[in-house]
Image (tube, rainbow, N blue to C red):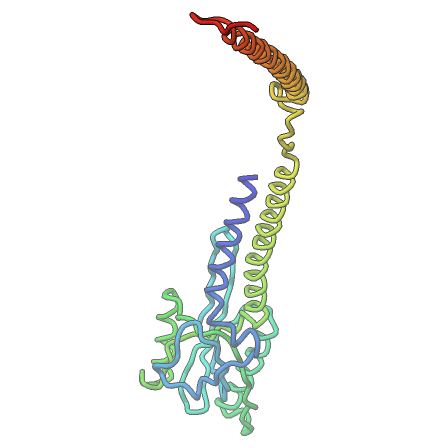
Length: 277
């Protein structure tokens, strides 16, 4: 039981942590609305912010990055240089063999045809959305090289990646899982508390009442025996009381008779006697 409680407590704690982490994404989770990066100043572009960017051109892929997770999982991301409406440069990140990757790949080809003069028709702008990330240190120098080749000043460069690989569904799942990790242990704790409370009440109801017949000494037999003794004593007292009254009455009568005889004797005794007629 204690191990179960500890496990539920750990799940609850992790659920709270995940919820706190996802709080900043709640607006995006419920509405799916991202901020247009063109409406943000450089200081307002922060890591973790959900943005969308309308690209007018996409020059080329400038780097391929391979990373490995804690369990050795291999992840490959591709990074391209995009041009916004105001002419600013920004890095766009996506995973290989995804819809977003093929979308950007086609847009890069259309942009190169126009920029090389192969066609006079500019490409139709595309909108990408994602989460602002820091440019990985391993590919930062490649990004700087692309900026230098395009002869852009640093003031016209956004030194962030727009990661299109993590869609809204990812944040929704994180939010839902965190709620489940909080709600399930909470319901388990409440159910366990109610069950323990019910058992306590049942134990209290099962406690035997303190009837005198259940006592090993002061039981029904004890009181019946002493009741008979008390009744016998009462009867004896009454009898003795009657006998004492009779004795006392007899003694009083004897004393009265004696007194009467003495009185009679006193009428005829003395130094002088009356002359009898």
